[in-house]
Amino acid sequence: MSVIVKDDSIQIERLNLGPFGTNSYLLICQKTGASVIVDAPGDAEKVLKRLEGTHPKYILMTHNHMDHVDALAALKSALNVPLAAHEDDAGGLPVKPEQFLNDGDTISFGEIQLKVLHTPGHTPGSLCFLTGSYLISGDTIFPGGPGKTWSPDDFKKIVESLRNKIFTLPDETQVYPGHGDATVLKKEKHEFEAFSSKPHDPDLCGDVVWLSS
Image (cartoon, rainbow, N blue to C red):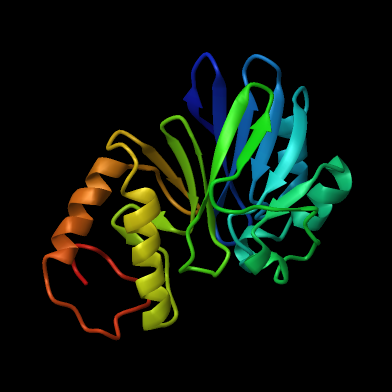
């Protein structure tokens, strides 16, 4: 567990969990103690231990891939709070969501508001969550490139999601992805511009790196 954001209004903690080294994020309202969990990769007991002393309000899912959901059933049973995800990914979750999230929705907990961004490409129902200058990006964007895609059409979708939803955010936005370390959006915008300035195979997909693909 590491505290990656701590200011007067919010604390964000990153937990690297499960067999695939997946990031789960705990967001805590500093003024009320209300909290949400983003993704459930594994080690439910570690998450529950860390939530002690807070008031959990939601489990939020960025997408439905197996490396993000292993502890979902256990957390849902223990916490009995609403599970929220995009409808397009709901069928792949081990627990049925009580709430479907759409682009532009707002999730409130304590005095914190999270804006929902629908960013299809990695999966049809991929979501990112934004509060202030902090973006929980799931597997939509990583340092140096987008999330993995499995077809040229999916790659086009993830690029469109990035152009229209992510790269319109301020340069100073801090990006916290589903795996690995954080990045800052200004760097990712510059690398994407370099990628976009060159011709590419129309069938491009898979693990794309902006500066070398």
